Image 1: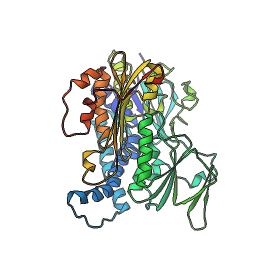
Image 2: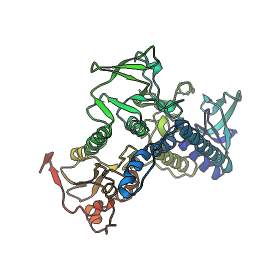
Image 3: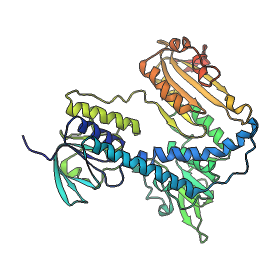
Image 4: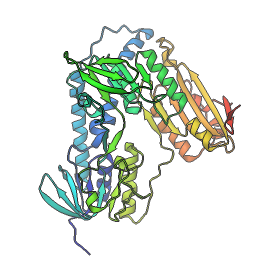
Length: 462
């Protein structure tokens, strides 16, 4: 048997890579992990965590306004962008240190370096100018915002990575895209007092989500003051003599803003890593193609997370990492389960969803029951805020199994996490009906909607 420096070498120090390194090292394997930027990856450094902190910051104006209905007199508030950025940086630095420490505490070795494959068992560490060897190699390098090099003036645009560290808060911003990143940042900037316009090429924001949620959120965002332009894209971006940006749209309109943010998708980080040299198969988008066990077409090289052609969510990458360790080192082949994944959009109001949308359910099942409730949350009754909550269950009429749950409103993400359990377990609407309600809560609607709002049989609504 060949002697290698490590049993496992992980390339990429994000959530998935760190989890795999920690678990394998704790199992007694000789493990090393290389990260060329900062441990924690997209989620911790420039994604989920700082984004959620900015979401919290952007919600305070509404909290201040709502307080009056509850008897509070709140003095005029002011916001300081540099303070938010600095405090965010402190928290991210704390988390980064924890990620690195967790690997080392489990017995793994960490490298701050770009890692390039030399052959199927050799990795060149650029920062250290040396090559190490490993029996098994795991690629977990994640992804990055998709550029738009064909757009004239794209060099003036920013992406989600840069948005967290802008030197000053813009007075006006145009965000192009209709996915969760674009929608979340549109709400963040609006909440911080920025004149915000969302431009999206599609018919409605948030494709692949339930249409009721998409439409309701769109309407609510516009009532708040966010301008949403669908069926539109930017044709060019030009810098004006005053330092502003003129974004020319396909509609013929020109938007003059301080920043243009592009949120038009993400690409896997697979370039200049030596993948082609060792024969690793890539998809048309550059993602690493893997089998159901996360193994590439090269037997000892594996890949997990956003660098693959599968689901791009942090918890999914972590789940894939745990399955990888079971398969590669514990003689327990375990395929990641990508079915019925709860997810959230931290818009304002936020979205929580798990399972099939109504449209997807209708395509798969001949008889679908829809349970739907729209109401003003109790927290808004005294504040006077004109904002509705939407709760929706999608049920297979034949088996009574709940196959989709969708929520728009306060704490929707928290509800989606809990709803993921009964939907994953395959519980029926009858199980929901037998469950006692917690009153007064918004979530009680999930177990008190006894009669379907409508049914869809063979594609026809009845």
